[in-house]
Amino acid sequence: MSETDPKARGIMLKRLRQEHQATVEQAQQLLKEQKAFRREMCKVIRDESKPVPEIAELTGLPADQILWHITALKTYDLIVEDGMCGEYYRYQVAEGAKI
Image 1 (cartoon, helix red, strand yellow):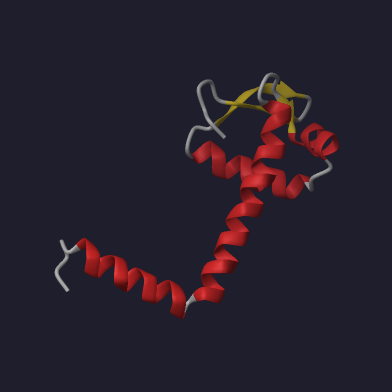
Image 2 (image 1 turned 90 degrees about the vertical axis):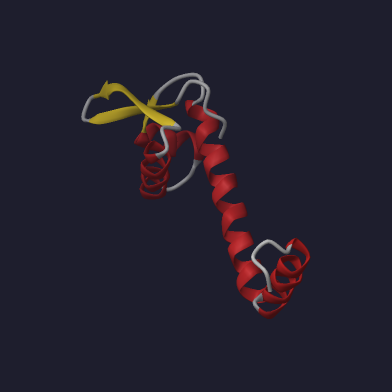
C-alpha cells in the first residue's frame, strides 16, 4: 500500500475498525462521557469564575474528577485561574475557548 493512496488507506482503516470494534466503541463511549462531563462543568464557569468545591456543588459532579478535567483543560489554555477564594483557586473558561 502506498502512503499516498487514500483508497487503500480507507480500506485498511475500515478493516482495523471492524477488527477492533469493541475497543473502538469503548473509546467512543469514553470520549462521549468526557465531553458531557466537561460541558456540564464549563456551563457554571463560563461567565463567572468559581472554586472546585462550588463547581462540584452546583453540578453534582465529583470534585476530584472536576479537578482532573480542569488540569487537563488548563494544559491547553481552555480554562484559566482567576484569583483565589479562601484556600482554593477560582477557575473560569478562557476567553474565546470553545468547550
